[in-house]
Amino acid sequence: MKNKYEIAAILLLLLLGLSAVMPGWSLMSDPSGETLGISSDFLGNSPFKDFYYPGLILFFAIGILSIIIMFLVFLKVKNYYWLIALQGIILVIWLIFELLFVIYFLELQIPYFFVGILLIALGIFIKNRVRT
Image 1 (cartoon, rainbow, N blue to C red):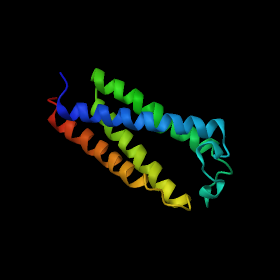
Image 2: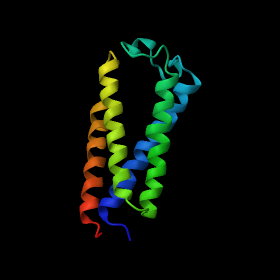
Image 3: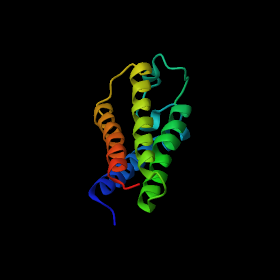
């Protein structure tokens, strides 16, 4: 049976995964960013000339990986709590790089930063509650 912290982690991972897959796919499909209404000016000082590689990272490292980890948490694979924290760390690192390289501040960065911190905290909290 899942406890409320595992359920919260599963829901956050699902939300994160679904909210990253479609934009990531769109950026890979149209690296100009026009489909999503994003100008290449957003890339600012980044090492990327278009949105293909940021879309690839968003799609796999944030989207697909979140969904995979969600299923692994549901199945309670060994050390699943570290996977929750790992996804939070990946998200926070992604957002830090966004803030370093993107010229514009996006309103979604703050709530997603908190999602990342919450995933890290949930992973650690669940680990401390699991009897080893």
